Image (cartoon, rainbow, N blue to C red; front, side, top):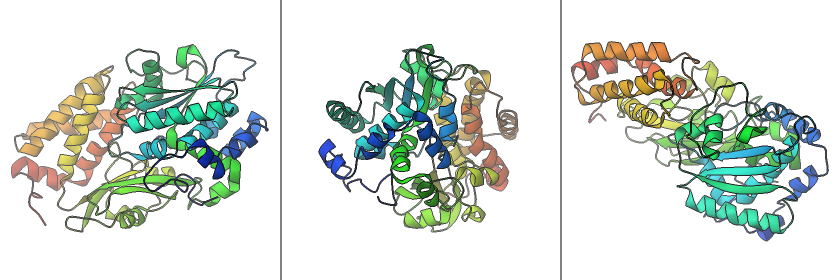
Length: 418
């Protein structure tokens, strides 16, 4: 099998394979093998592979699965939800997998369902991904007709699309037909999730890696990585680069290498900063270009890997303006449940817009610093949306004080630069 497990069998035009074509490439071999071994053995293999979840938090997949109670202690329906809502600014990796490799997603979901004793699989996909919804629905019908689902139920659920649906309890609330709002934990979804039943939620990329671990072994998977975190990663590179795109690379690949693969920095050709994990990650500078891009190393650098979505700024792009766009997005996407999000995010967005257009006053900057100081520590809001939204703001204030001061008194000095 290819050393690029996620994308190695994809067609250049992203046309999905038929079931017969997928079987000819070795598809469903891992499913057939998984169904012949106990669920606990599947769990052990995924655990040994050091697979961290690819949805943003990086929580070990096998550890999450082990939270599910034994079926004999909790008889009845049990759910596996595959989250393909993908609303992080700059992220587009799950769309590729859903559109180009739907049978790979199905394989991973069937194996994960077997490992967690799930009785139903629900794949939630944002409604904008029409080709993905249609293609996966066809692939599920093919797999069911071929007998791969056995007694398992699997279906696609189109989502209206909200950033908050990335939080698993808000996703569950949305699937139940309610407003997408986070729930208090505990109980955690593994104990009381969809309709009050044991539920596991995994990202599309996480699920897509499972068949390759079963087919090739845990050590093979770990050896693909540059660090202790196993496997490969789909990295998106966008912003000021010459050839934005999606690249599968070893976990722990550096930002320098990824930017080079995207054609290098565009505009002036000089890097100012980058966000390693999408819009909800801190700005890092040129001094971080050679830090391995995995969950642990990014955390030590003061940022987060998140979805592995690099947003690159050259030295003619203004991070104040970029942060203003991010903040407006997060203010709009907040569920409004708690005061820090409901009041703090729109307030921060207004101040950043005022900084951008030159109408901000010194007291506005003081208020912005207060918001960042009060809201940046995790745990100050009901879910982690506020903490993530504050990451670019806090790093903007810390990394670019001279630029902010220039905005306050003279306007953006980067306008027309380069």
